[in-house]
Length: 499
Image (tube, rainbow, N blue to C red; front, top):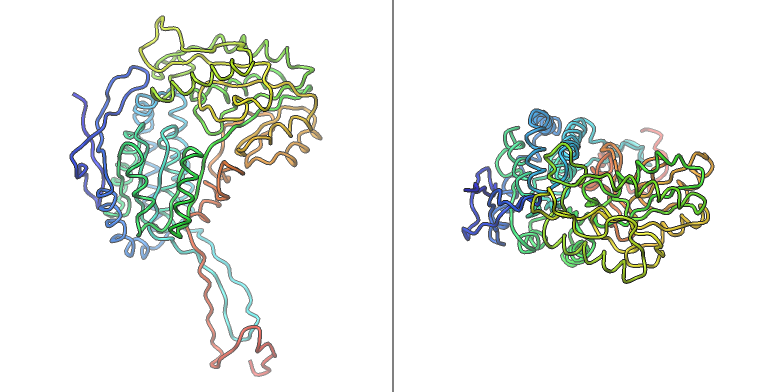
């Protein structure tokens, strides 16, 4: 019988108040792996109260001490990397080598943010008045609500939890219902690393109820959300109504530009990895290929041949290249877009439907698919599909490619393959996405640099790197006047000769 796991609130593992639980399914086999609490607003309220209670003492703990606990969590993640990766593959389907990369990203973020415990830099500046000291410092926002998706179930939570905790915030964490065991594993690691009770709390649940309760919670000062643009916009509107700060990481419709002078072998490698890694279920997935007319046919012929060799299967099988999509609703959504593409007049060059069942487990498998004869205005070239599907568009030159690249509502990641340094720098300058690669795919962000996008991809904040600390801290400005008299800024500007 599948085991049951619990919420973590105030340092205790507890069931949902209702006693209800939901199943955690393996998308490759449709086997029920575990059960998790189906929490309500009451459970979120308990977690919020625990975070509020723990906030003062956690904030008072020196940042280097907080960072030591995060460093210890990184060590534990490293020790358990293989176990965590295997459980991740089982519950959300990505192949094992990618799951290991997901855990490694969490390890990297833990170690990086542990270093920031001694580098929460403020500023000291000269005052315009004599005998007056002026500086600014970073302070935590208070209680943070973190809402995360299923596709990177350790990496993305680490992007949020590690900087939030090092900065001195307490956290209520609501992970996706489709990868709860990875979230449980991460919280267990942080508990073992020594986080005091109430500093980190996790509340599991199906549907929108616990997430909405977290957004609405009066004591939650800041929301960090990663997920769809549709839901993220609702979160942003609600936070604006409540007057609380919010960080949104949402969708993408990313493109690889292949110029006529590109190294085609390298570009094909980049296209396969970016379009079909994690079965296309990445916000940075390359769901468009903008290929120069001079190499279009040659590039597509070779790419199609390469895609035909990809093996589908259970991600734990080392022979597997592409795993299943995460669940039945996602499976049906991707299949609906395959029909939309045909109805719009695009041609299926390879794939185009459910994977044939010969030798496959009974999971949610879809053939890696490439559409050709695609126009930039087609829905399959405009809307996020979030599956193993990419659309090839013929372009005449770099200017046209950049215009098409930027002609969607999203603005997360782009790449250009060229051996001309002038073209590369023109692309870097003109493309308006938050991330741009040259001679690499659209995926592969590193944690020491800002991650995020423009337009409907986000609301201006960034994950990772130094930018993450901006998300989880407030600036406090401090003045110390030791003149012994009232000095009025902008008014008493004369020099005091006796100073």
